[in-house]
Amino acid sequence: MKLVSQRGFQVTPDTAEALRELELQAARVPGLKLKIKGVPNYLCSWEGVTQNPGPTGLPPEVSMRPTGREIYIDSEIDGSPVEPSVVWSLAVPLGFMPWNRYPVSSPTQSVFHYMGPWASIVDFLHGEGQGEAAWPSLCAAAQSSVGKWQGGRETEITLQAQLHRLGIHCGPVDGVVGEKTVLAISSLGLKGKPLREIAEEISTWENPKPEPGETSHGTFTIPGKRVNGFSSGGVRLIRTQAGFSVSADAPGKATFIIGD
Image (cartoon, rainbow, N blue to C red; front, side):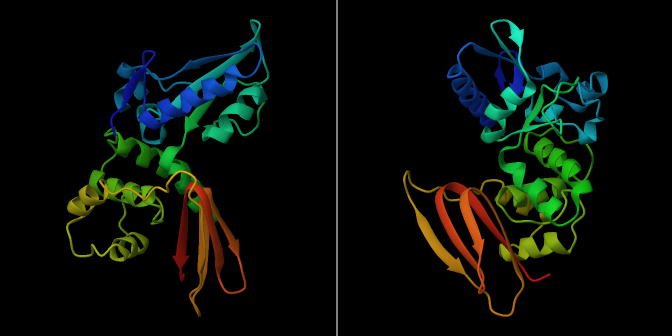
């Protein structure tokens, strides 16, 4: 994925799309004006983060500044600043994750990250009790996807990031090819190939997209096996006595983990 320039700062194409939608939503609020900034090109790297870590103050390996997904959003009505909750109400439903835990005034109240295809990493790892690995994994995956990762094990990081992008949970994005990563590779029928070749191949894969207005439903059952399910977007899962009921009325993902 290549970064694109928008108003003098660097963003991913999907972040640019989300920002356009955010501005359309804001235009419907009388008098509301958004002030949106990002990371300039010359600071969108590990060296740039070392020079200027931005409001979060994080080092390069756990910074989203090189990814094109760190955005700074402030708002005002008739020239007066408004409460952070106003921006939250518009940005969060579109997939922007606020840096602050609560919508209160603070030095980092304007920091947001557009999660894009990496939102599931946070969901998976928090759901498994590995919350401490969620943010480093998110940063590594997002940096890798735009060619900014400089923390070593680039092939392994890229492979794990692309597995997550496809909705295949393989544990933390840490460059360690453990059991979950091996199982994920096997599930795709790619076991035995060099890791670099696998990473390059699956980076071109895309999940199928439903036709406009398409609705689907079904059930998923594996007798005698422990099954966990996760969904996002327009896909919904309901646990039943036999397994899961699945419905989809918009683009999204459903991922199932079978066994321990």
